[in-house]
Amino acid sequence: MLLTKKSEYALLSLIIIARNSEPINVDVLAKELSISKSFLAKIMQSLSKNGIVHSYKGANGGFILAKSSEKINILDITKAAEEKMPSVFECSSSMNDCPSSRGTCCNLWPTLNKLQNKINVFLNDLTLKDLIE
Image: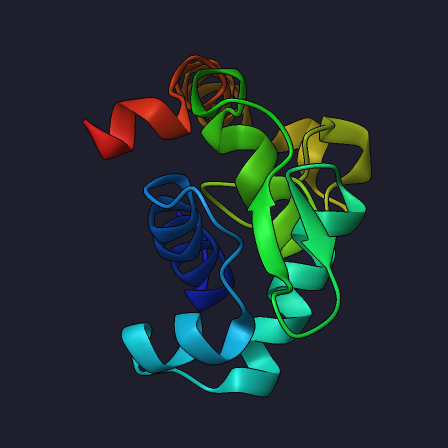
């Protein structure tokens, strides 16, 4: 699956945030996860922009979940973190948009597309709460 560190860090950060009742700032998250603060800040900004977390400024600022953990699915998190739909392979979701311009004669595409659809359903049904418990 072409999920990057962005998705991994988004998920790990959200697990920490979900386990706390107070806002958690990027400094604390980055330190706890041993990752770059600037990289994590960009990820958190994307999660905020996509309605997954709320951002609060100030001395007691940070991030909290925008909704309960059982209402945040993993597909939405990965789409926000990656800033695109996550995919198993570099194939297009449409045979006509194949990057190699050979989609109409590709024997793999129908199978890969079925696999991608099943993964999307799985990630859509899996919630942040499932990862916390």
